[in-house]
Length: 374
Image (cartoon, rainbow, N blue to C red; front, top):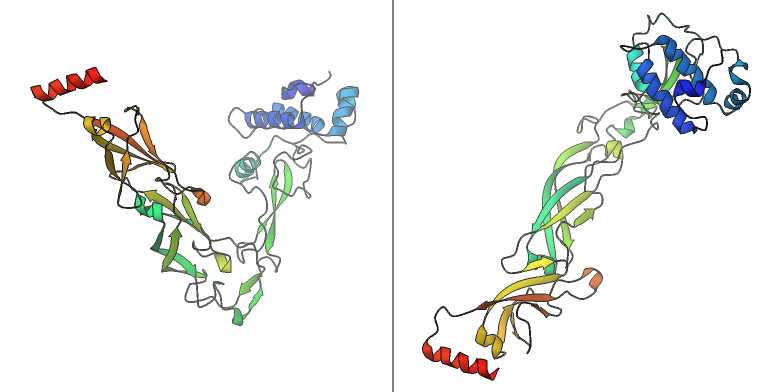
């Protein structure tokens, strides 16, 4: 009876390689014989189907002749599917057919291997030998007042941070004492491990843990930093806040973060600016807003009204004739500096009309006469 490999994987005949891979992974998870409720027979069928359909040549032959064509002389078992959908391992020494199923004894790390293949905690590839990690980045918050954001300000911060060890120049060892070849990796900086599973054998290459990929072991570690290459110290940084800076904006200071590993470059310091609320002005982007009380006579007689400005001091403004009191009056170029030196924003005044609590008869008569005139 002809096997329908597409039906076994639950995909259409025009399924893409990615769709085949996804279907295979899901079914392999579900029917794996080492899991509760797993099905060894079904698992073999899934493997067989994916072996054929994941190969361009085999798939073409299967589509033309069915499952009667020669399957490269496989002997059953758990031959690993062509194409390796999992990645991160060297399968050059993979041994197909050496496990014919049934007995899963003797593989104490079977669960670990399975988890590695199907997205568990295993390595996803080899690390570069000798690669030194850059130091960690740091972040801090600097509070300023609105006037400092307007004018710009010089600031100084002091913080505790790991800095490069002065005794060994951040290497973690005394360079003049020399080093010797690592015996664990024979100076290669990486080691190769062979593991046996029900899939067969596979080789995994990883960075040597003893020399951390360097291939050499220093003869004398630095006593000042205990071989880490860095010590914790207080560090003081001076920096300038540009005029017009916004709330939440970040200033980056390159190299002011944690010292790197074994002489690698330091991380960066990110300073997040927090502008404190102001008692008079409210800021929206480059514009400022202010509320001002004004009497009816001030408005009607076009009197000059004194208002504060962010640059310091006060200015006098006139309310133009015909001005709608519920609108905001714009005072050009009295706001915050715009980015890139593109001038300044505006100051907007929101008037709150102040009326007298009591009006005597004479004042009332005058208002009535005014109403007739208007």
